[in-house]
Image (cartoon, rainbow over all chains, first blue to last red):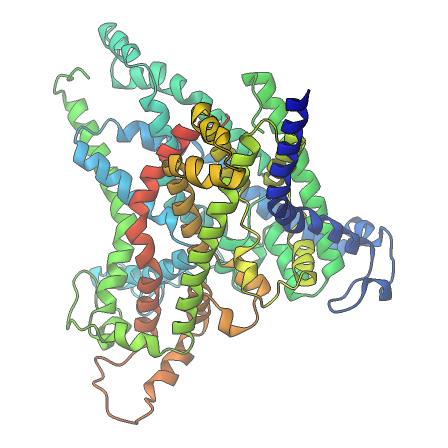
Length: 306
Length: 299
């Protein structure tokens, strides 16, 4: 009994020691939830909440009632969905990267490819932009100069300011940045496949592609599935850094995803209450999506992802 | 693996396979090489895009001159400080919390563990977050860079899982000697967790170095700008910066091939920003795989 109460005191002491850390979590992750209250007021920066008008659900109903706003939301959602869908459609690429990289016989070449292709993952989006500028810009960009020198084009093409194929261009940058890194987890998954399975398949006379189909792919499918579920859970969390940096007046219509729209409305446009409504709905939908993905995972894999 | 017979098909497969990987790898690396050779070449050639594959008129003047660009020195200082302080705080805070949650006697352990972990899966949204940060006095405040990331939930999970694999007897003997939690953590658990700590350090430091959005949202005071933010600004207004530098204070004549141009400034700052990453990223890759295997993350 005495030992039990001593343990309890120790547990409380440990809790006390970690309290400042829990406080940090509370301040920066939970307290912002209180900010949802701005959604129900007509809040403007610098004012006291008590001095602003309480408007109830007006900002919510506006989303549907006001045709201008409704159109905006549809446009922004279309961009967000398009980019997320493109991301999901290309999600097998890292797995294929890993599978085919392991077909390369030279160990040195394999290591080289693996190391060098992960570099873009570790640079910031600003640097990706700087790199894109150096390669694609007019006047001093590598690609324009090269094409001119080869005589393939007559006048330089302004790749960066183009409003065509914005979704695909953004996908291209994401792939350039993330493909090599994304392959690493699959390389690890393939390495953990039992080697005897390959030997057995060889004995059975399976060729290269048959082995991929019947041994490698089933072996990495669970990993692939988990990542796929996570990308479903993050379907509307496209983030905004990439799109913020690459946005310009020409491509704004196509590049504005939900997060960027919220930023442009709330921080640039000063419509704090309206932007809060949108980000609040977004948070709720993404939590709902997470539960959907988790339920799917439990049903199929008998294991949860959260 | 058993060698296939050298059929035409097999040779073609390898040719294409090597070719595709070679092209993608070059696409990943060449831009950095291209930027670098331009920073050390004759500036009048680089600004008209004439340096394509090899440097010409090599000089290193750009690297000396670029620090004259207003704000660069201070931005470098801010970036280095936030990376050093932020990483140190995250390392201690996150690992201590992971350790605390590994102890079964922790008061209401399950509840508090969930309290921390759940934050990985939701956020209030950027506008409510910004207003809260403002109310907390985190606007134009250096601590906004390093305080919010003290607890990194993902690494709390990783560290907790790792600590649970350390033999309990090691800590118990210290406990019998009367050592408190602080001593046990810093003297026994911390030194035994080197691989996972390395993982936390490399990932946090790269994250801190690359961070951009927090400056965008919270910082108006140019003294607190980071290198990333400065690079972003220069990309948008680089011609003005180059013009201001061309009128050198002494009004002396400068060799035009060494004169900073919009192109040379942009590219030189890019190299300055990417250099630390280039130095550490090969380790990142190693520790990432190691860390995942050690921590055996759920999933």
